Amino acid sequence: MDTLTIERPAQDAQTQFNLRRWAELVADPKWIKVEGRVETDRHGHVLMSPPPAASHGGYQFRIGAIIDRLLPDGEVFTECPISTADGVRAADVAWASRDCVDELGDGTCFSRAPEICVEVLSPDNTVAEMRDKTALYFDAGAREVWHCSLSGGMTFFAAGQAEPLRGSKLCPDFPALVLRR
Image: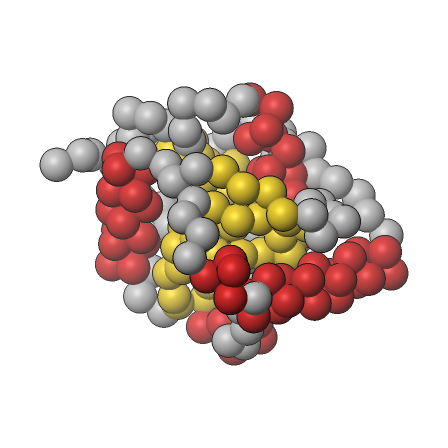
């Protein structure tokens, strides 16, 4: 996966803007009852998508539960808002080590990506969209980005490597297929 190259001062300014804008949205009562995913672009405009299919949430839950069992020295998050170079994006599942959790704090949006960011693919996701989102997570500090296909097949990517991995380096026992019940 290609990663974006953004100069640090510009990235820091974008992060501060993203965090301020996200705090505004979270504090605005009209957004509390909105169903679906809310993200922002780099200009602070709201990007919305409808609620995903039930199977999407099932995969999020199963992936989170497996990570929690295999990597107990960290914390699992779902719908995790992350400041990126292109606004705030929400990883379907994320895992952060204890050190990373301590660094990121308990804000409403993380200033950088946790070590692992997972995207559960939806039928309307394009290859270009997933490539861009993966690059944004790597640029924001993720060490691995995983994709879960519609059938539960897992693809693992590592920062700085163009080709997918055979499995996760951070969670080597994570299965290549997440089964539905």
